[in-house]
Length: 473
Image (cartoon, rainbow, N blue to C red; front, side):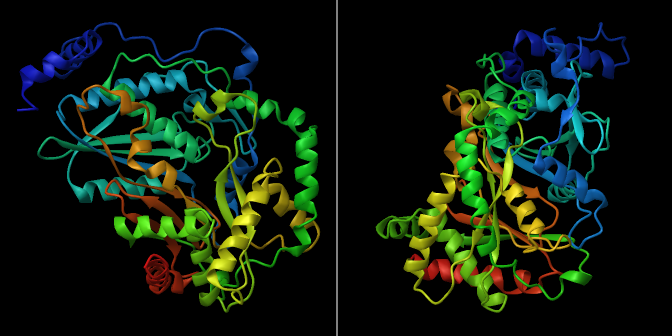
């Protein structure tokens, strides 16, 4: 049987056997051997450990703690929930060792907040330990709730948490919280891929990383002096005055903004494939179809007036190819004026696709800078928020991507799959995150502040699903 002790021992690497011996001694009350040194990096440029500024999105997430506006006061966290099936007695040790290697490899996993405006990388950190627990779905749900609301005070390391739940039948669940200051969707994909690779192959060597988040931040003045940035800035500042206001939510002023999660099945695999085929037939991407449909149901629910919708996206600057392989947060927002409903759906989808492609060519100017200019010109109140956003992680949630770097493992031992996850963000009353399940279904993690936008919980999920079913027929 897979969980037999002799088979588990046979699979242990020499380092894992030594670690297991020390754990057994500690449990039996024996004095453990000298502790291994804490995770550290080689001595080098000392400036890399000096404080450096938070990015725009990091400042936004941090400032929300003390903001008194509706929908603020909410911690920003990224939750990852992985299921494993295999020798669960071996898994916690594999996870713990893999996480320690990731801490050494990725500087942002050694980051701490200095204050509300600065962060720094620690040259060395204490030896990280995994929390291991028994229990079923109720225990997992309780931990996930706690992780969603967790706040990382300045000076505290680590800015993440992880618990491995050992279930029956050689099944286990790993729930991980990252403070959202640490990573975006791309970084989460890097984390999952490299974690799974090192769980399956504990001695696997990953190529070194040639650039850090701190270096990318330091390069911003040079990027802002480029012709590409100047063109992008002129493009967006020329459009600011044309943006319609955010959707009007009558209940927003009195809302406490507590988020409720709804897992909404949207399309079975055959209808999802049909929707992608229809999108291709009219010359648009599947993402444009999903966004256009979402904008339509929101318009019907908010009175049909034009509105501006922010898309959650990640833009990694063109500094080095390795920027795609580091754990960091390069999130920004991309402002989209929702198409008016007077045209047909296909016309709206094509117009939206053309606009998205043109916007993509000018992504060097941040959406946060666009919002600041919008406020400066008086088009958006300083007290206003953009309460409805849209997020698609279809490309990150596909099974082939979720396995990431583990795809080359010769014999998958733990058969991992994504069991769930979410971006918990402030200032939003509705944030749908669209993803593809392991079975090929299209799903949506529907996060809604019910008291700010009751229709979003009561009616919009079914309206959105109905429209997608019609479009995929």
